[in-house]
Each structure stands twice: as structure tokens, then as C-alpha cells.
Image (cartoon, rainbow, N blue to C red; front, side):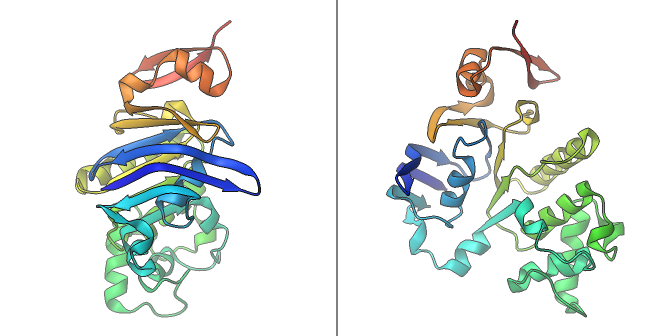
Length: 257
């Protein structure tokens, strides 16, 4: 569905991405793992069509991504990012915020059109917020706010869902609830493609088919989760000695002393 060929990004004399080759199949769930400053957000901006690469190609089903009209790109590719949450008015309801995505607006002020309200209600129910439709956004917990952003991304039925550090700031229970919601969504929408960016190894449960390791703007490894996640590779990626362990089919690292 999505293919990057020899993609590079350079800005102000700095190389942010270099020689990135990556294919994402429809219906797959990828985790992109790397330390801070690895180029993860830059990679998402490229695949989301927000940033034009300095070299190489980004193809959507064989068509150069930037030849696809902006409105169509934004329908096909949806983002979940904490940055949007900072631009939302605390007094707006989840219903208004999610319905706003249908009109390319941050929110809808006043009465939400009936058809848009129905679509927003379904999206919010899908992430477990059916009982929180009209609670002011600012009164929701951080975990609930993240789910509102997820529902907003899903309301237009995208083909690719991109999540940039979507669990940042969440406590353990809220993070696990968010990951469980993603797992349920994938079961309900088997053709939905997911790219999930994180720097937390323990989030890469069996929900993810594949993992891409990114460091210094270059791909360090990619492929099936169990093949890519190896202690020696992760040590080099994060620059710290560690032991890789597994519990309930989820990886985690402990310092090696």
C-alpha cells in the first residue's frame, strides 16, 4: 500500500533521514521504535504527506504520494498526535471535536449536524467513550482525551492510521487501556493499516506484526517483531547495555550490569 524508496530528508545542512526503504502492506500493524532524535517524527511527516523528502520517492499504491490531492490524502491518512490536543478548547465536547474532523475543522461550535453527530457517536463508542459524548474535553482524564483524538482520527474511516507517541504522558493503567483499544480496533477493522511510533519497548506487544528500528535517521532493522527485537541490536540503537526479556509475549529491557 505504502512504499518508501531511498528516501532522504535534509534541512539546514542536517540529515534527518537517509536511505530509507520501507514497504507497508494493507492491514499490517507496524511499530516504529527508536530513541529521542532518531527521526521518527520526520518519518511520520513523510509518510503522512506533510513533508516532501529531499531525495527518493513515497508511493501510495504505486502513485507518488504528492500527486494525490491534499483532501484525498487527508482522508486516506489520519494522525493521532498530542500536538492537536493542545489546540483544542477545553469547553468543547468530544462529540463536537470528533465531528469537526468531518469538516476539516478543529471543532464544531454549537449544534452538530445530525448525520455528523451519528458518525461521531459511533467513533467515540468504538474507543469506549459512548458515555462521555458531552463531557467538556478539559474535564476528561488524559487517557480519555487521547481516546477522543483517536476517535477523531477514525471518524472518516482512514486507510492508514499514524500514531506519534500516542501514549506519552499516560500512567500504566491508561496506557494499557489505550493499547487494548487499538487491539480491539484492529480486530474490528482488519484492513486498517497502523503505524505506531514509540520509544518504549514494552509497548510492542503481539498486536504488532512488524517492527522498524530507527536510529540517527537510518533504518537499523525491520521485519517481524520476534526477529527484529534482539538485545545486541537494541543495545546499539539505544546506546546502553541491556538484557531483553519477554513476558506474556511482550518484550521489556532491564539494565545489564
